[in-house]
Image (spheres, rainbow, N blue to C red):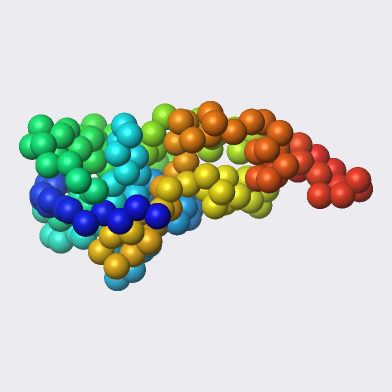
Length: 208
């Protein structure tokens, strides 16, 4: 467990329309960065790696869809460089899709007989990015030829065994495992201990 005792904060002003809840707390149940993140009272606590640094992030929205604002607090272990803080700030803005202008899509969708329902039901939702490319790749692998229940099982086992826990703001959040950590293990260990791939619980179990 890594205690993140330092922090800095900044405000994000997304391109409107922007619905914070729909964007970071997906209607389909997908998390923003980590399956272990905390969502309470429309505030999100999550964790991710940026390079070799583990950081915790607290996101608290204010404003409206047309005048959105997000207060972001970044918790870290010991770095203080202003240039690194600015870099992290820009990355978070990008991963939240806060700098994406969807006005052209809305102009098209409002005239489309099918897409118009997207405007009505998911107004202000923005596409977000994974915490890292490795997280995206491992998620894609876990979804291949497997029911959602098996995919969830594989992801949860991998996170439980290989993730780093960030402790900050009274919360404990597991970040998605890094490529560096996974590279130190082997395929057989992941297959057996995390039940990845064509793992079988018993001789009678089918694939996945």
